[in-house]
Amino acid sequence: MARSFSFDVLSDGSLVLTVGECCIQTAAKRAHREVTAALLEDRAVTATLEVLADMLERFLLGTDFSVLRADHPELAGGTPCRVRLHQCENGSV
Image 1 (cartoon, rainbow, N blue to C red):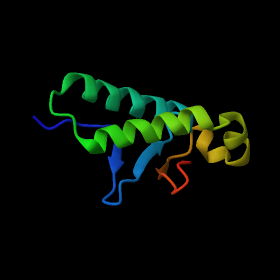
Image 2 (tube, rainbow, N blue to C red):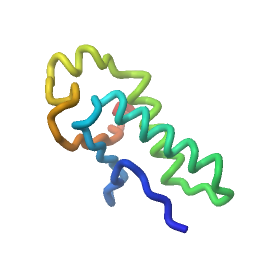
Image 3 (tube, helix red, strand yellow):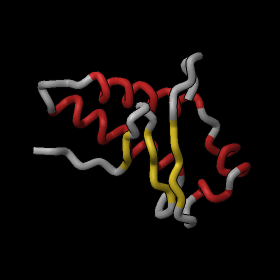
Image 4 (cartoon, rainbow, N blue to C red):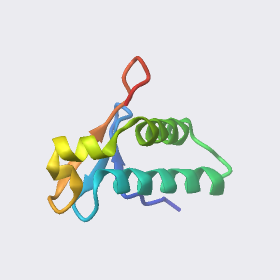
């Protein structure tokens, strides 16, 4: 059975979150919960899920969300938008 997520994964491995009903931090937390649940439930863990879990964890731990929302009010919720996350060569998201 195919799993449905609240985010999209692009062919380059980046992740697209949908913001609007919630802020960027909540959207990232939701995506992290979904990926973590998939890793725990599925016996055949894919490398893609592991990379996504790591990328989301880095984003959640390494981002000052108060500053991000202040600099980009559309990420505070209420404005429908899509946000692409990708991991840079230095490991940052």
